[in-house]
Image 1 (cartoon, rainbow, N blue to C red):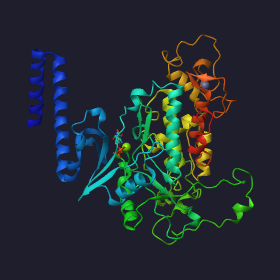
Image 2 (image 1 turned 90 degrees about the vertical axis):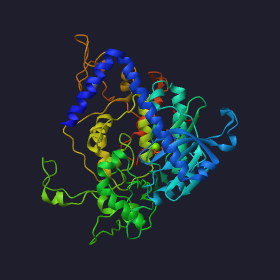
Image 3 (image 1 turned 60 degrees about the vertical axis):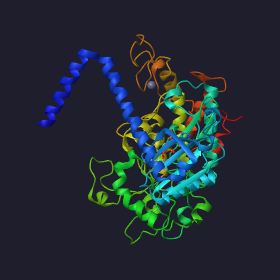
Image 4 (image 1 turned 135 degrees about the horizontal axis):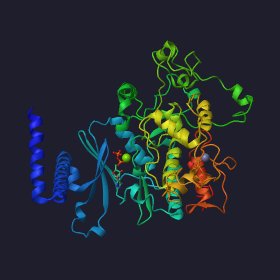
Length: 502
Ligand code: ADP
Ligand code: MG
Ligand code: ZN
């Protein structure tokens, strides 16, 4: 009752204020109030950090907050000894303060990645790490950058080519260490547009590749749940939390995944080659144990009566859920992550880079918007087509059932549409009577976004371009967004692709 009264009083006050000051002034005052309280909170956080870590205060001036995630706050800093210098001559640093609840093994792993991999090929390095009790900061070189959404529609073909080259160089470097970054996305690939500098940051979810399951002695490798959970992942955090704790307590600070499976002559063919038939069946350690190992969870499930039906049978609901790493950000997860395939590889990052490229080509960010894994799979099916997705899933021992078949979208047509050639008009509207229609979507041919039936998405013509972007850029996007991780192009090979090659 009193709360309701409180609201009434507030509304009345605002009504009175509206009469006195006018709405715009009130909104401005509200914004100012919010900014002031944000500044005050930030100042308080900086003061607290410096109090907890006096050595940081001794060496650095901490100016303001420049980034915030669920697991860290990042501040802009400069050296105290440079205090008298003009800003242009100071050395600037990004000071990443990790939340005190982060597991020490995870922090150690992030630091190791920065130390071992960083400082080269557009990959962030670390200058210093300071710790006092549970307060830990990484001090890294600072790079000014804007939000991707501010420049995604402005990049032309030459700029996009440079940007994608830098991203692929960074990924090639990280992957050469047998590490999957797992969180490739624009807010982790910082771009200083004025000076054309690039930095891949944030190894908080990075994961090391492990030997293939058949070579791994029992017990099976710790499942790779990416250790850290993003806020978006927290819907799954309760079930994963126990396993994460277990992995860490068994002395496995680094989550593991299998290296890429070498392709052999029989892949996709009608038989099994000598090498494959001589290979021992994958060893499994879960028989009789309380869990399911990676090899077993990768195995296609036996077909049962409920497959394709509207319900789940007793046997199926009793089956333990597949366990696989899914750390990363929604919208950038490839099919193998969404399908919980346990033996993920560096191809995970390549897919995410493909999403970035698709975003830049279509000037749409975010490119995928689904809120959960099933909706995300439906979005992927719309883009790549149901059949290629189902084929890729089958190769991973998974089955994707959809209510309708989709041929897939043509990224070239989509880019042309979204970038304005026709975007002023609602699709399907204003069609000339008698204009030829697409036999699939029933839209006039010049408005249809269906995939080309003859030309493959990964083929291109040097003479063609779409919305100012060479056809080769779209061909590369198709190779990066290959739903099958085994045939997806690698970062190193992408650098030799005609869109990116020197
Ligand atoms: P989190 O793990 O919380 O996502 P990140 O390492 O990604 O932390 O940093 C969060 C944000 O802080 C980045 O998106 C970026 O805006 C900013 N940031 C991080 N490192 C730097 C840096 N070296 N230079 C400039 N800004 C940075
Ligand atoms: Mg980040
Ligand atoms: Zn069509």
